[in-house]
Image 1 (spheres, rainbow, N blue to C red):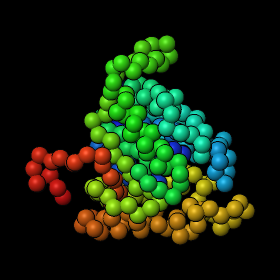
Image 2: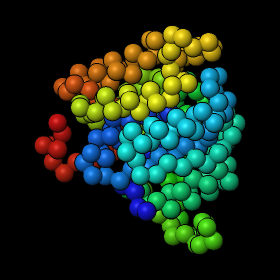
Image 3: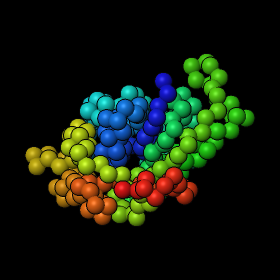
Image 4: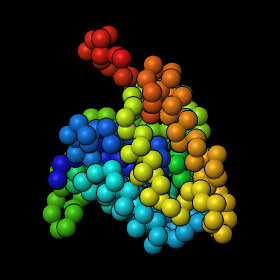
Length: 238
């Protein structure tokens, strides 16, 4: 299956929290989207890897993505090694996405920056035909995505562009809150984490609303780029 967009996250819920509305909008426009989780989030303070896996499946169903895979790299300890790069390369060559969305280039959680660099490096290396990979016993062809964009996570990084996601926030939040073990629950007896607070839950809407305000729409999701963003005409900008 060929994807238009492959969204990569270090942990299940990274993608939904950061670019879930963008994904929902692109799917509504007919694009084929998949999600690749690098780890199972097994070091998470709340819930478990098994619970998170079920939640990720439900979130994918809500968003309407075609495929969701998990590489099972070591949460908290994975590194940008040759082996990890090859694992991501196999997925890129399997799905041949035009666009890859990946973790923030810098963030509070160390896995986010590591995941960002790992995904970016794999996108470049995947285009080198002398790197040979196999999947299910078959040789893979080289493939390099046309664009690699980095979504914004905990830190308020300055975006290079903002996607108007007005009309898709409710879908995003429905997908995010499929991760019931991770977010605010006044009845939960588990330890509180940065994302389980009521403030963090409310921030999912007001941060996107503020980006929308800055671009003259109701809601927005921001991204950073690795190279200049090109347009055919100044009228391409909204």
